[in-house]
Length: 278
Ligand code: TA6
Image 1 (tube, rainbow, N blue to C red):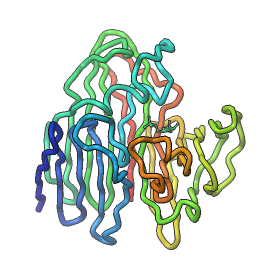
Image 2 (image 1 turned 120 degrees about the vertical axis):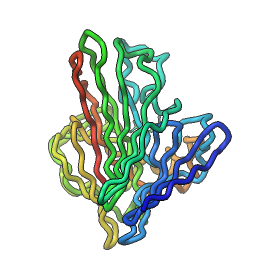
Image 3 (image 1 turned 90 degrees about the vertical axis):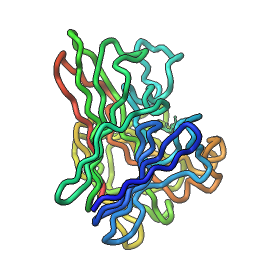
């Protein structure tokens, strides 16, 4: 049986779900999953910054930010007046539907606007979250206009780990662009380990990635991506980020299902970027 509660934080609403398999929380600001705990091991999979404001005044630090329709500073037409990581993580979404399935609760959020500065066209954007033994997050866009448009973006997930210096990300292949080394390109070597600020774009469409720490594994499966971004800011980075405690970097790694190139969505067509977490 599903239970849904709402917590109101100033202008924002946090939806809380519980069923036989799991508990999860979703913020309407940002269309942002902020917690997922499967009941079979009661382990929180997502990391949330203890200093992140949840009241709709700034994008949320932690959980699964929705970066769309571009990634980071890949602004359309190099227009740097546009917001970093797109315009949907810092706006309100609406709850469209909650339905019970035999093994999960299906929650659909809709972005209420059909246009946004930087995207030349009209769209319908939904986030479909399936809460069960695994968490499935699907960002679905339909091009409702009459011409093609291009999109980038990411499911910028922050995963909770016990100690970043003892964490390994396995399964990354292809070449990676190292943003810490003038965006030079290197062949991936597995596993990826962490000893300093890390900001890499792995150019791979392979779906499976594992985050291993101690005896624990978080399985991350990606679809619709052209790359997997791996990020940890380390101490100096954390100190420079307003809504992250200085030692926050020790307990998370971002492994992101990303479109860092661009995907064309033809008129009338749908495109889905998906991440499955268990
Ligand atoms: O996805 C990695 C990244 O683009 C990093 O360069 C890092 O700055 C991070 O995202 C966080 O970005 P934000 O705008 O949320 O501070």
